[in-house]
Length: 136
Image 1 (cartoon, one colour):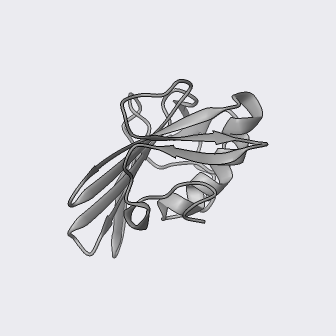
Image 2: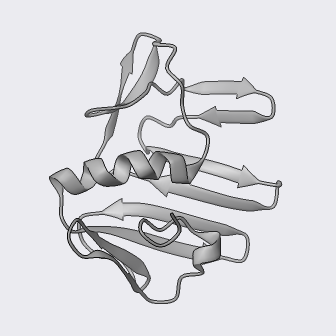
Image 3: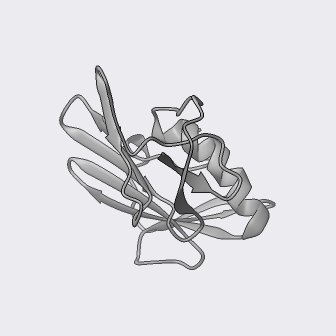
């Protein structure tokens, strides 16, 4: 059995996987994707307000390895349920953390709407972040 993201998931997520050079795992209590670039910079995406994890049989589906690829799929789907949606962005010199939320959190976030696009609030280094309508 492996966990999968619900509802309307595009692929199943094995709990733990190692396929050189990638390794990943899923904590069923906290849905978060994390990519480490060059061993020195980490980008993560948390979607716990919108998705839960439950065990399902293995499917053999492909999981995209980048945050941007997954956000392109998730962003439109989340907006179909919640408009606007807020993407909290926390940044340090070696990491960027994204978290989708129903309300703004903190002083640094992107407000994303179907009709109005993306408004950035606070200081976000978009060269080190994935912001819908800005980074891609």
